[in-house]
Length: 368
Image 1 (cartoon, helix red, strand yellow):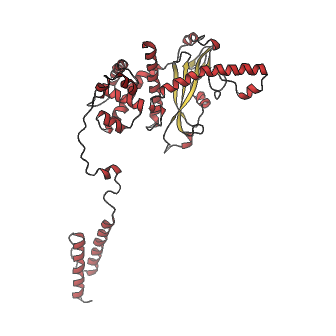
Image 2 (cartoon, rainbow, N blue to C red; image 1 turned 135 degrees about the vertical axis):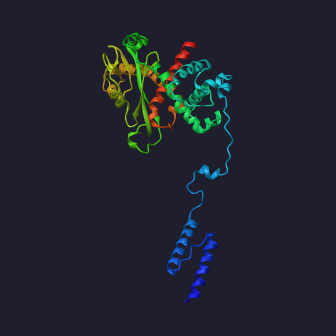
């Protein structure tokens, strides 16, 4: 190839690059080999750009669908003002009457002075109502966003701030009674005059852990990953103790061994000659009283069998009260359904729901 043919070939290559890329060609270099090398590099870069995927690659599905989204401004809704004129719907959504809600607002407002709540277009009543609806109904943040007319991120900030002072207000309602208070409970159940309370556990389903060992949270009995809670009530159906946060692979007996010992002079002071009813999985040691197992009944004499079966029937009749109490606080769907939020919050969220349930029980008992 002579010099003219080389020059003509270079002109054709430059024209093709300019036509394909619509970019300025590389500057001419006297050395033909160096010039051709630079030209090949530019062609390769253009090929790489052509081989790249669509501009939506790696975008979230929301960005792909709503590329030309032009959202309007949020308009805050006064949900509290609309609900107070409908007391029944207010009770169903929040678990509070209008009067008890106002009392809760007064108590929580004092606590909010210690928190940096920032500026909000919502009143304190609407923020507490939003948190109660989240606890009671456990809707998604998107649904609460549409209901209250605020952004999803604002819903998350309000919930994460408001549940803490609410927990500080209601958690003191759950307290371990004094020894004399336990003694005063004796005799309320005539068939079991020395029994003053019941204990049982319940489970809260969680999402499958991604970073921690999954077997620690999996319950072979429940067949899902969960967190356990232990509840003790007195024989007047008041919750006197709640302890949450036990791993799912532990049963009630293991959980009972982990919280403070119960007995005279112990961390959880308890009088002599008083007893607490427990399921058969708990250890049969003072102060717990468990039912007779079927093996123990079959091996006993016939008269003793009748006595033990009668005892088990009375045991079931009274111990079922703690099941009723757990049903009440698990009407808060945040702890009664699949928990979707950080697990480190769950123990306090359970205590908050138990405190609200006890507050609701006290209100019904006093006013109705």
